[in-house]
Length: 104
Image 1 (cartoon, rainbow, N blue to C red):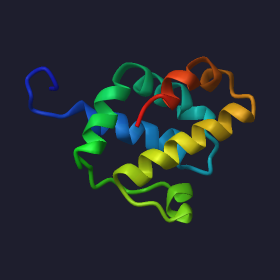
Image 2: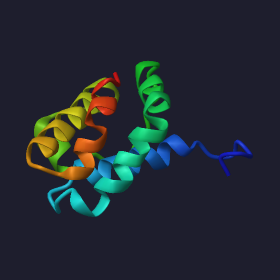
Image 3: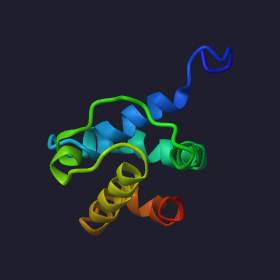
Image 4: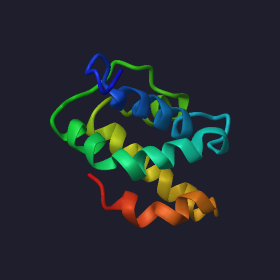
């Protein structure tokens, strides 16, 4: 669908990242997929964020409690969560944390 330009895959990326970083259920279940989105499409996702391309998807509980909205504040929240998870010893974050931190 993305190749046919009928669907923007960045939406799927944002949903995946949200599921991995904005939930109380623990990030482990979706964290690997979220990290891969940052790894392979982080620049595109950051660029879309900078240019105001947001998607009206529901915020996860952690993001709502932090009072973040969509766009740059949400991106900053994701980076903060990744730094926290890295500090807590999640190995999958440690592998890519420098690359992710270089984003937006």
